[in-house]
Amino acid sequence: MRIQFLGAAGEVTGSCYLVAVRETKFLVDCGLFQGMQLADQRCHAQFAFDPTRLDAVVLTHAHIDHCGRVPQLFARGFRGPVYATEPTAALAKLQWDDALSLMEEKQKRENHLPLYGATDVERAKHSLVGLPYGHRQKMSGDVDFIFHDAGHIFGSAWVEVRGGERVAVFSGDIGNDNVPIVRETEQIVACDVLVTEATYGDRTHSSTATRREDLRRVILDAVKRGGALMIAAFSLERTQEILFELNQLIEHERALPRVPIFLDSPLAIRANAVFRKFTSYYDEAAAAAWRAGDDFLDFPGLHVTASVADSKLINTTPNPKIIIAGSGMLVGGRITHHLMRYLPDLHSTLLLVSYQAEGTLGRKIKDRAHSVMINGEHILVRCVVEKIDSYSAHGDQEKLLRWMVSGKEPPKQVVVVHSDPPAATEFCAIARTRNHVNIEAAMSGQILEI
Ligand SMILES: [Zn+2]
View 1 (cartoon, protein in one colour):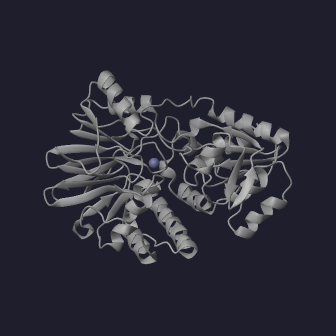
View 2 (cartoon, protein in one colour; view 1 turned 90 degrees about the horizontal axis):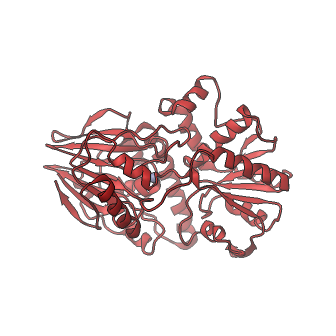
View 3 (spheres, protein in one colour; view 1 turned 120 degrees about the vertical axis):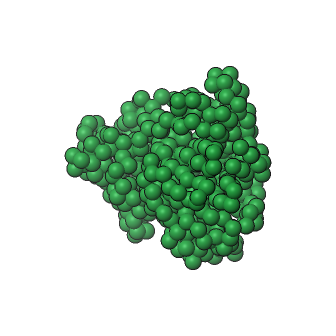
């Protein structure tokens, strides 16, 4: 088996690994490069392989940095199957539609060439093969693979690949403990090589135990101040987790005053339908709620604003009120309009529940900027800014170390991807000492023969 690291090697985006076993060649993930300098040029660059010679693509989950370039493979001649779990397949379709419409808008605005067109997205959608966890799928006479629950986002998987005599495990992204709705990460299997993410390889998250209580406190304070509470959340997963928590607080614990709550995110509204469809993927708490007839993505006081006209009605609704909108890092999305309106308001609150990458508007506000530029306007930040870190969908250092050796025997070799170099270095050092594993960080373009 031969593995080449073509993305997320020495960085956290653009996940893409080319695997070859005799005549069979396939990709594990094919995601967008994001955030860093040259990200856009790298997305537009030629692939380091011939897409017409690929047999298949295997997707670990529906985050755009893992699946965003799949339609581009079709634009460049790939015609094989795209394997994913059933929820990942459904969520990837939404992601590709969303990415395409963003690229088309950018083309109109800046004459910027899109990575792919509507035909490529349609081809990609039709090539998706949805599989349940635990099913051994034959790809060729030499390769088969199984999706196992990664506990990261809905439908997320780590993948066990068998090629000839060898077993490789690709972690995808490994989840935090106790992520609402999603089950816990499945134990690893014995393998010759583990390709593991280490996004938070040098960090420890705050405890998830007080997460719901933290959210309740922020909401109570915000309502007491009498302004608007803006919750900035990624449309996929984080929004559904927040809805799940609000449902618990409002319907079951009756721990919140009745104020209007708006879900103002078209992508999140479409993602809700995927969550409602694949109920067999729920964890115990979500499954029990569902069996008892509780739609935990809906509760008294929740208004779903799909159209722009509905969205504008939010402005005329008197405070206090809660607005959940994307994007999580305040880069575009409907939250922009609410920020322009409520950031300068002393009585309002902005709650950040996502990772805020360097250079984003969310990061600037988190770092206490007094004023920011939005749509070419200077906006004063006078509202209260709160953050809750424990909603992170990624496992921290402790979780990753524990998962790596959770199987009957430790992996014979470990390669670290999806991590900034300082985090990867620290993670490798601690994994060597604590788990006694042979571990190194992948370099971009590096080839590993096992
Ligand atoms: Zn992810």
